Every structure is written in structure tokens, then in C-alpha cells.
Length: 144
Image 1 (cartoon, rainbow, N blue to C red):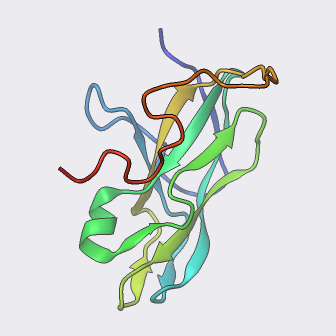
Image 2: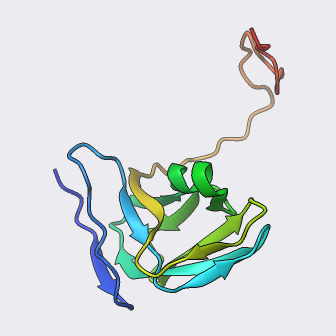
């Protein structure tokens, strides 16, 4: 079954598409040019608005090639677009490198993956069920 997502362009950008059969995400493109200075954060528009069906979300993820080759990522790592949001999708870009990076209109700046959303119902209790891990947190499994 295909998930139908309605799209409205608010700038002259490519419509997202799956590059290869079986890809989990579609690329998103910059709707503007911007010179991102080292350690600077800037909200960059993608030029699209979408209508996600209730019960789903869109996750906006960084491009690994931008991170590895240029030190460019998203300031919030993974962003969530809720089904009730109707504004332009914008990505908070960050430059972790020591060189300015030119974001160019029409170039890839992120990817979007759609996922099913489950609504949790919380039940307050006095004690949680015990596990072999319990409250052991960071580093609890060691490095070997």
C-alpha cells in the first residue's frame, strides 16, 4: 500500500522522489543560496509544504555525504514533522567544519522518511518491572 502525501511547492524546487527502489527516504533540496559560516546555524527552506496523513510523521534526517565530506549536518539531528503541520519544511543546518560552506539552491540538504506513529497511553504505577539492566545507563555494556 502506498502512503499518499500531498505536496504544495512554495518555491521552484524539485519534487521529492525515491532515487532507488527500496530507498527509505527521499531527498530534500535547498530553496535558497546561503553561505554557512563555521559553527553557524541557519534555518534553510526546502520550498515545499506537505500534508501527511493522520497516524504518520515525517522524519527529516541529515545527509551522510554532507557530514563526512563537508562537516555539514542538522542542528537537531533528526527533525519531526507532525501530521498537523502545514508550513514550509525548513531544516536547521549547522556547519561543524572550519571552512564556510555554500548551500546552493537546488542541492540536497536532507532526506525525509515517513513513519507510522503510535499514540501512547500512560499508566502511573508505583514500581516498574525489573530487568537484568535495571538502572544501568551509559556505558553499561562496556566497550568489548
